[in-house]
Amino acid sequence: MSGNSCAECSREFQTDEALGQHRQAKHTAQPQPRQRKKTPGKKVIIAVLAVILLVAIAYFAMAGRDSGAPKPIVGGNASGYFDEKAFAAKIPKGAIHWHPHVTLLLQGKPVTIPANVGLETAAHKPVHTHETDNILHWEVDRPTVQNMQLGYFFSTVWKKKFSSECILDYCNGPEGTVKMFVNGSPNDEFEHYLPHDGDEIKIVFE
Image (cartoon, rainbow, N blue to C red):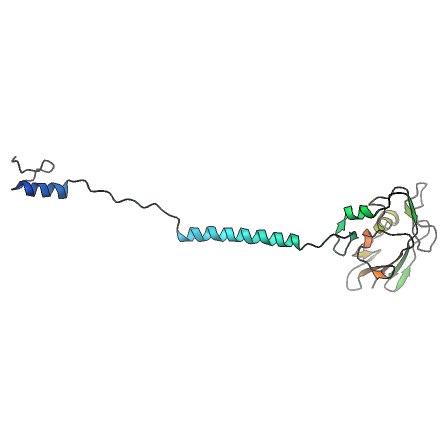
């Protein structure tokens, strides 16, 4: 084998220059092209941004709902909201003997509350009646959130329905709705109302 023979492939060349060109072209290691790092496709990026946007919208929507929530009132309202803490702050600290008067007018007909409601046993109820004059006798040694609500007399003592939805056997519907007035003014606390001595309470279904 001559001196112009390629050691890698045994090809013969007439000159050293030709051999050198051959080696440079055929046997010199070529640099490998650098592989590009894979980056997330546009669809993936758009999907991630969409999720972030939806989370942000949901967060601000909830925050707005909280800030716009109706403020609590003492007693209740037509939606049934009741602020027990605010109600408790209004309760007298000592024993009371109050006499609110209740008028029930259901589809134009007055309803008489029977005498002696709450006096059926030796243990008298904190709220009761004596006569058929619709006067409630609120004789309470220890006023509480429970026994100082108007609804306590109806549901616990008299065992009758009373709320913003129903009064006795009459419930909101095509025939009418429940309304309440205290001393001549509309009142939406209904069963959660805190009666006072001398109150004129009128409950109407029409």
